[in-house]
Image 1 (cartoon, rainbow, N blue to C red):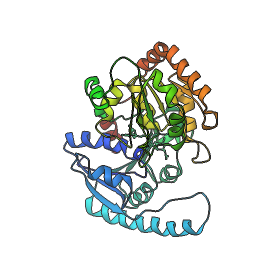
Image 2 (image 1 turned 90 degrees about the horizontal axis):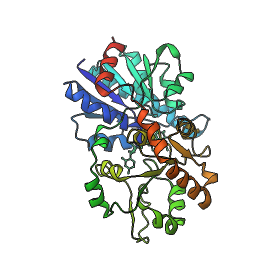
Image 3 (image 1 turned 120 degrees about the horizontal axis):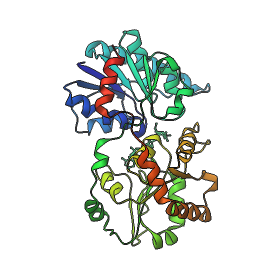
Length: 355
Ligand SMILES: CC(=O)N[C@H]1[C@@H](OP(=O)(O)OP(=O)(O)OC[C@H]2O[C@@H](n3ccc(=O)[nH]c3=O)[C@H](O)[C@@H]2O)O[C@H](CO)[C@@H](O)[C@@H]1O
């Protein structure tokens, strides 16, 4: 294997898995290219990463389940995307395409199929999104993070491989975490994460209950871009729009997390054995993938779950107290959770799957 073309984007969740795999490819002297959109978050993340990946932008459009004028415009952008991707793939001649999903990946997978370049799609949510539903018709293989996903995808070409976690997140230091936040080991640390974009509902809930929460916890609040509230200046409370390298040190001092239920984030918490209270993105703003993710983690005994409409002070306090009381049991359950593949064994599998 000499060259891999990665694709996927739209939100961090659709780039994180690729960013975890690219360094492993480079370690094996495999060249990597990344085909993504012109302005999506994937471009910024790949171009600012410490990898040698060449970024190739293509035209991309959002796919919708309903007909509208915008949809028609976007169909043309997607068709242009197929031609752009074909041109890139013809020139670069990768051995195969690895896709993490998101709308930009669909033209790439279709172009690969038209050039007889094999492709593998990765689905991190329990139920596949629209982009992957379309793309899987053209791909050779589909890998899933959740075993339960195998119920929703073509069995003959799908394999459960488990989560692929960014390696650096395991290397956090408590000392660095306390230094960055100014916190100490006296009160437990509560980390608030609203997904890669932040969450207005979670932000409001935390701000409304800050007096109560800061009596019991030191709080690290990841608010999402543009959501830091400069008027809040409270001891034991720090807020950041978004953190990159610091996250591993924050994880190292975190006792409990309140979070959205994006697939990457919740597997990071499980791997690092951090009990979690999940508030999944609702059906009004999504297809409900996070509701399903959260339900599975609740079933495994890793998480407590509150739906958005149930969020109020008494439910918040009750669930946090329950997490505290069950902490040992939850951590024990998480410690039995094993990753199915390491990055090394996954690469061996990929090599045999694309033959
Ligand atoms: C709104 C939306 O479409 N959400 C989807 C998106 O979530 P989203 O993009 O939020 O992705 P995830 O929750 O899966 O992952 C978030 C990632 O961002 C990282 N992080 C977060 C905050 C921060 O300050 N720094 C940082 O590095 C986390 O460590 C994690 O790796 O993709 C997920 C995986 O397909 C889906 O399950 C979500 O439903």
